[in-house]
Length: 125
Image (cartoon, rainbow, N blue to C red; front, side, top):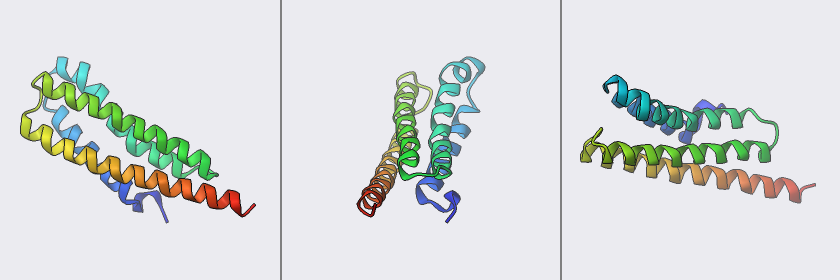
């Protein structure tokens, strides 16, 4: 299996593309302050999934998946700031929040599956 085949990776890529499309329409000040931070945070979700996938041990992999979850939480903060500062409308906010919540569930399930592998690996040694 390749990391590109992981459902959680595919979803994270799709969500990051949506954020990119929104931010690239903003003026310079909005892009430079909120936009860059938001794009970096959401891009970090998929980046950490792929980096973790390339690690040798399940524990090392899981650490990167935890980083990915942290980046998703940061992205939710930028989503909230974007709504509060009227950079996105309520409809866009609701759609993205739903995407973020789905991604969060998938990511937690993925982390839990790796945790089970760690426990199985420990028991077989």
